[in-house]
Image 1 (cartoon, rainbow, N blue to C red):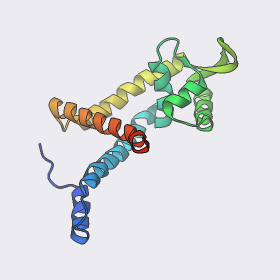
Image 2: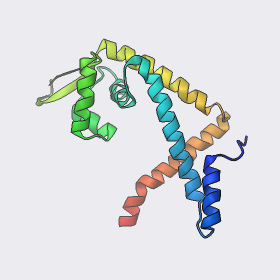
Image 3: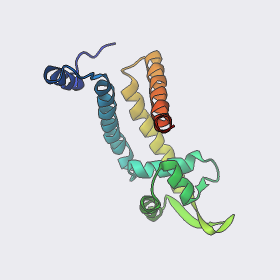
Length: 172
């Protein structure tokens, strides 16, 4: 299945006209990844909006949900999983706690620490929001058949793994 020329092709063609010496293959790949990311990010925001949460807040609730019962993690564990600073995490937790979607309480295993736990309302919201978000993502993937979607997932996995490993290899 071919979609023909797209806006990234137009950009690459313009560069080829003014800088034919450049190999624009990376621009073709990452330009499309960037545009897909922006488009899907906007769609996901719209999908989560009816639940009163943003994408960032979805990520917090989803991380707690994926942790399994009792759906509780420390703020530090959440920050590490979501690659957020503790300050950024605090703002998200404040908003979600105010909305009644989670609660913070003393950690029963560490008297100096806190534990963040999904409430029943939070569990309901995340279970409905994740279904809505997956429906949006599935609709976007419907332009590919199952084999193409699997190939794309595999290629992106390889690219991501290679990109994450690259700084270690370059510094070695």
